[in-house]
Amino acid sequence: MRLVSAMQNITYLTISTLKPAFPVHGVIMATYDRYMINMLVRRKSVTDTPYRNIMFMIDTSSPYTFLAKSAMQAMLGTKEKFPDYLNIEIHGEPSLVCYSSDVNLLGLDFLRKHSVQIYTNWPHDTFSLYNVSTLQPPPLPAFAADFIITKSQIRLACNCSQP
Image (tube, rainbow, N blue to C red; front, top):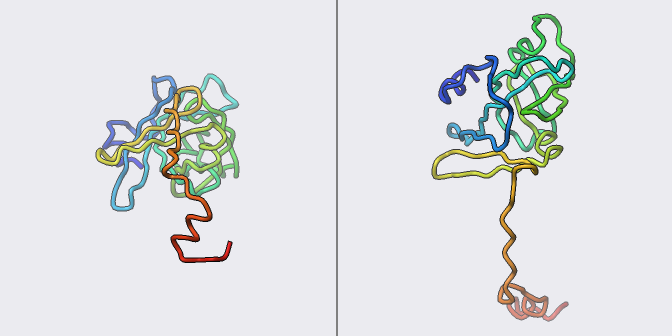
């Protein structure tokens, strides 16, 4: 996480002077196209706590969000046993995270709860996260009549006589 943070000119786990705001921009890394993004995180129970720069890997197949040991230490200020769950703010949004010894993982629970959309720019290996308060999605295109296929057209194309 420190290496990915350094590549974005951000020092991992440092206190941030920025205020959380969407959209948030990230990079797509390595052979496996990992979505990596710096999010501002602080303990929810302590409102005066400053935000810290924490690099997350986004995993839409994970139902939960996790904080690594190093991030948990920075949030709690301790090296003792960590709670299984912790109430925090991720980029200004209340979240419940689980403890993980290895990786900061932004899971589907955060994305769904806060209506976060991922927009990918493949040619530049970048992406942006938008939430409902910042996103004005483009209107969906109207379906042209030429693209509507009826069951009878499918049967005709397949030479099927059954409904």
